[in-house]
Amino acid sequence: MKHDESALNHFLVDVFNEILKTEELCISNYGYKDLSIRELHVIEAVCIAEEKNSDNRATKIAAALNITAGTLTTTVSILERKGYLARFHKEMVDDILENLTGEETEVFIRALGGISSFFRKKYKKGMNHSEEVL
Image (cartoon, rainbow, N blue to C red; front, side, top):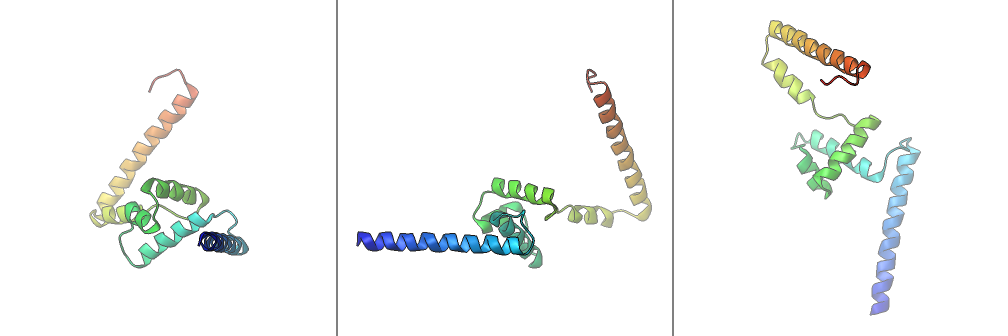
């Protein structure tokens, strides 16, 4: 009986490793040499959630992948840096624009531009005067 258990375990480990090697080879053959299996599975889960218009919150996607929300966040950050995923800011932008008139939108964009300019100037000033406390 012990021999059967060992043989089955060995077989399952070998099959699992072969599946991983096959997935990695497929990813590489399609030109995605910079993606890991985990990253590919995260992209797939995000796309499925988006396709189904289902809940695409990090906690739901992490649960679907059986990983922690922290692991998902780290992986999404890596994928974002690599250019494979973008965080979902579009929903927020669309909602803001739906609630503003054209004139209000222009004023809002000018105001945000002013705020951005202020921080850019402060950042440059801080870089030139590192002893100054902001």
